[in-house]
Amino acid sequence: MQDQVETICGFCGTGCGLLVETEDNKISKVKGYKENPSSHGETCVKGALGWGYLRSDRRLTQPLIRKNGELTPASWEEALHLIATKFSQVKENHGADAFGCFSSSRSTNELNYLAGKFMRTVIGTNNIDSCNRT
Ligand code: SF4
Image (tube, rainbow, N blue to C red; front, top):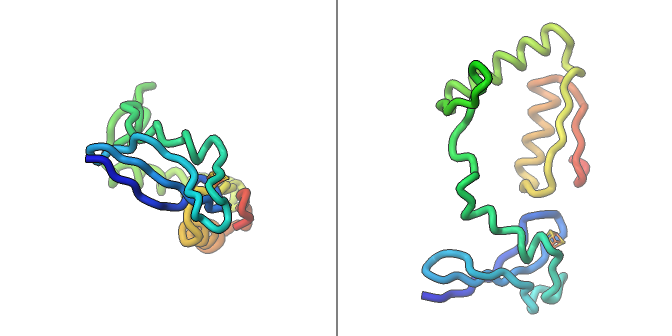
């Protein structure tokens, strides 16, 4: 079954309108949505063609931890515990300004806000930036 869905591109903060065509519930084509008041049907290459990864068999589907040189599947609990332990070690040995965070304009405003809060209140540094200046 074919269908069309109007949406907003999530690749950057410009927010171009997209028309996503699907067939059997899978994306078959993405093009600019002419009725969008800001982009008038125009997109850049990312908006029109940057969706192929959705079907890639190379997508990560679970955390991987390097053990003895090999990336090994791990649970989220194990991965987050390892990250917290390593972060604590770095902060203790080198201070909070040893960290830096580059957030992403592909994330929502809320996620970028959380990234800033996390860096400033949990890590304790103002070393955060992104192309949308969080
Ligand atoms: S189509 Fe390009 S310019 Fe428009 S929102 Fe997507 S990434 Fe940004």
